[in-house]
Image (tube, rainbow, N blue to C red; front, side, top):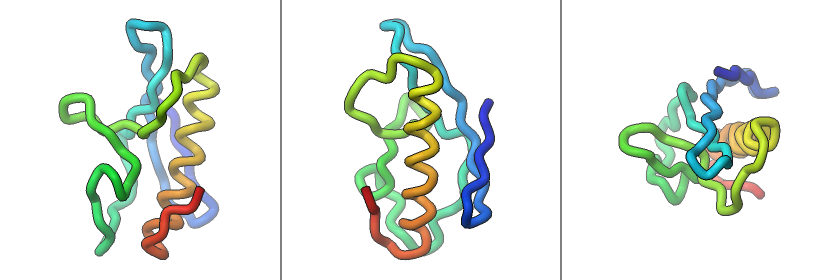
Length: 89
């Protein structure tokens, strides 16, 4: 489990798992609420594996470190989305 606190003082926890094809996926174990923002998969850039949310990413993540970098970027962008309602790349 990896914990990240952003510059906006919000805490996120990720569980980086290796998949059967050898790639990695950053599952979202804990995150702040979205308040009044849309919580849908498209708006929040999350997908689900059963009931477990994970960061939506289109290419295969080849290392645990690469998956954590994607998770960190998602957390920073999620902070902006929570505050402004806009998802920034």
